[in-house]
Image (cartoon, rainbow, N blue to C red; front, side, top):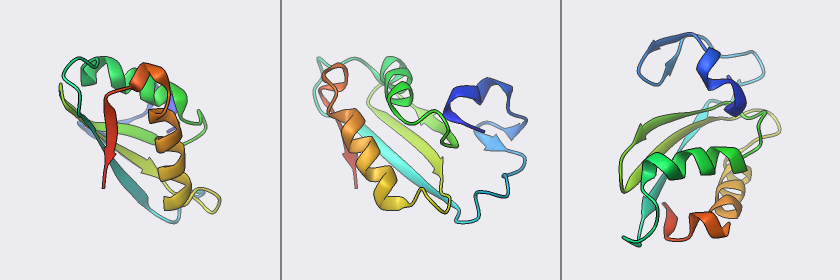
Length: 105
């Protein structure tokens, strides 16, 4: 499942994908972002913006979305490792539309 086709994936429950493509042998990374500024948009809006700023070919799914916290699960591949994911998320969070949100580590 890619960031751009989340709605068409077959899921086994909330946020669970039934199978993983063969190009995702390395597992996944869970990324948590939190709202540090109460004037920033809530998670329901921010998750859409955040996903739109990540590479569309990445396998990712929102695991939970709350007003002040977002949990994403991003699939790892031979070319997408944990440092790559964290750099991309940091870059996305630097976008002006996501001011007030930060990655929790």
